[in-house]
Image (cartoon, rainbow, N blue to C red; front, side, top):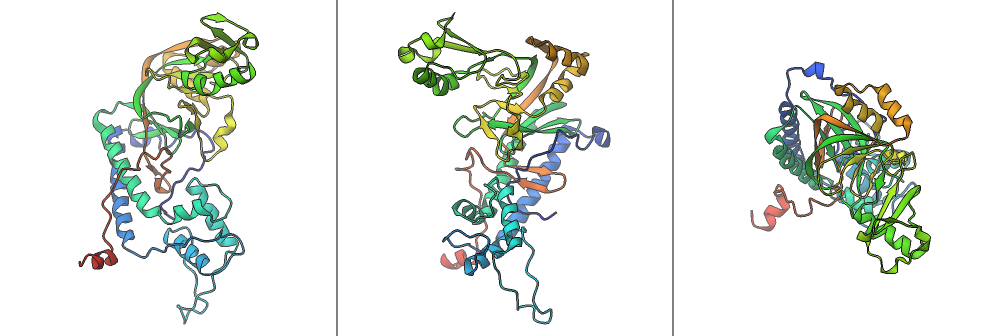
Length: 399
């Protein structure tokens, strides 16, 4: 597989068991992270060395797409070669290696642009507009910053690792169950959108709630539901009960113009319509942040899944719930029976599972190596890494 420094946000088809624990029975979780850190440090050295090599700038201009030609297309092709997305051109005559075929925006280049766009989390259309152009012209610097950022974040996590824990990595929108020195499970998640971010923190899963109700949280009440009540007299939350000052009311009969968000409570009944889906995984923080299922599972088909109001939506939540409750004798059949009952049931975990909501902008893929992810919350804006001085810069300062 070709290595290139972009953000790979491709979906995983299903929850998968990776690197079985039996293959690393003597390994520890610290060994796993230490190995990842070694790979990240090696990658940082490789990127730094490659930054001293040629780097083609694709000039600004009209949109480039299938059928385009000219110097900017040639620069685009060369930039994708430098990023290891495209193979170098083959000379027309082996005896004249400098004679290369003309570069046009053909089907092969279109495919390369689409591959690059998908890997960087851009809209995939094969068209090189301002967004794609900006990414092409800054990839190596961002990759170096992302790798160094993750080294810092991962080192901080190593201080006191439990035997098993879940990492929810916000930039990659994936979760990994780490146990006995290996990644035991990996699954796609949806995280908070940039204006309602999932916080970086440590916590623990203490409960599995089957058929949960959903109480509209303060942020959604203030920004979404109350404006809707004021404009239409409807909460817009299906199968819900609306309370004002603790008394159930018909929302269509209330003048909401002078009501404040904290005076309202809205509770959505359990069921497939529920915003939390059929499972909630309770955390201990006081920010109303937790993991849960969803009633809109098509979100996992998207490349960009920063769409929630801060909580983490977990793909295949039922399988995840089965894994959490199995150690205390709750079988998959028992769990299914509780689900089929339609009633809310709380299963207290005898052993809580540590959870790290992390912000790793570079991760290790068993096949692709180091993969750099999009900084979806722009947390690295003020993070700097000393870059190598180029010959041109040295000459300009008299070096």
